[in-house]
Image (tube, rainbow, N blue to C red; front, side, top):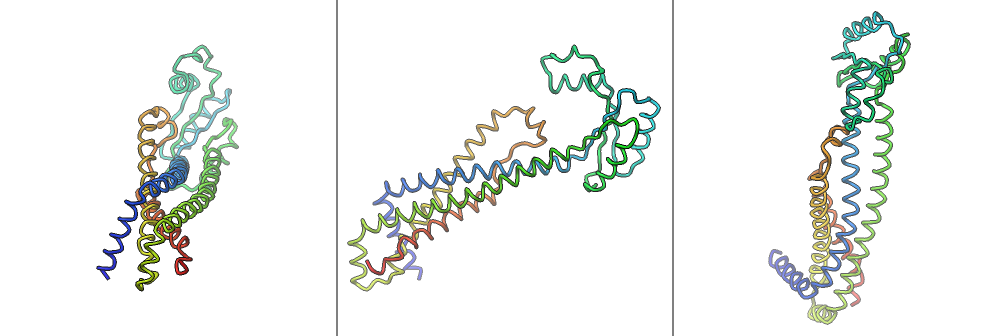
Length: 295
């Protein structure tokens, strides 16, 4: 069995070297298809990370009315500090809100001339990570009924919109995967059929001396698998280079804003894509050779 496998591998290598232009063209075409799929998966991976980060942000902003009595504000702070679900309470005055907004969102100081009254005062609270959405909503509903509270922002609406975007990205990636898989089957199948035609004389000679279909098909299956593996590998490598270039130019303030550092595809996904490329290549070669027995 080992001798047969070794002989098959040598024949496959000889065939690829002889038809290297044909195989390189196929690998290039597959790389383009896999790059599109890998890029979509990369976007979805980082969007999901942002969604998980914001879903467990563990904070909320309680915006106070302009005419809220200081005594009521202090009473609210003391009450919040006693709630078991809340770990920290911080009062932000209108003046502090203007200063923080100017530093974070207006580095040129264009809004510095606005009065402090233009910025609402608020109470920032940190919530325990194990607090569920239902528990947080219950706390928010009680806070909104207080006379000194104007609004409560938990950032859940943003998280829900981001989750919807992630679901759309997953659906788009699934459709793109189908297109890529079909492209792999078409490209590799056509390449193998063309290689078979160019080696028709060799195949006929092997069949005349009693070679089995399995023996004849072996090198072509290896070549198809090789094309799929190399196409996916080149795609992952190219995407990794592009990712490093883009991340090197990414503003650190943007990373701080979204709460995460962009990450590359998990190694399981990258290896899975390469393995899938090999399986698809072998399957496409098998489909392309389904009429070999009649050759």
